[in-house]
Picture (cartoon, rainbow, N blue to C red):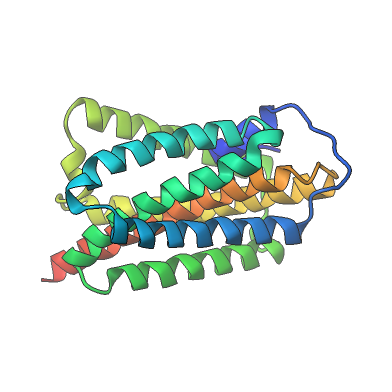
Length: 237
């Protein structure tokens, strides 16, 4: 019973922390919503307060902080809450800058990507909760294989300088579409992992770890939708 999301795979390897309260679905939903709200506020305030000439170094710093925060939050239940909040703040700045760039390229694309992300999340949650999509060992195995293929593809693209295919080539739209579909399927695995945590009576601190995992997937889908819609608009023009 494993997830394709690296955040949840880290969670499975972490040691159990037993407390007085057990994780609940309401707690996971509330914490995920809180992290997303913090990210939105952080992105907005960052764009208002940080000078434009500082965006690039701040973006690098935010990426490093976000990466470290995720690693810590998914390995220590006791530290999950503070580092989840730090991740949300850092990721919020990244979201703000990336959204601003795409919005300048294609006005209105951010709102469309936001609606698309919410729609994908809702549909996948319905498909999972209604058991229309069942998370089976075979399904997980296929997802792992595809994930490894993607990682290998990205690494080789960086090594051989082929990153332009993600934005300018005739295959860019197809690649982005495939990544969106894969991100949506990742949500079902993450829902499954969240269900296991609640049903097993894991400590309430794990709610933060699950919330971070869900946020990572949601942000990924949002970024890919931004890119997909921007590429689609440029091809039409």
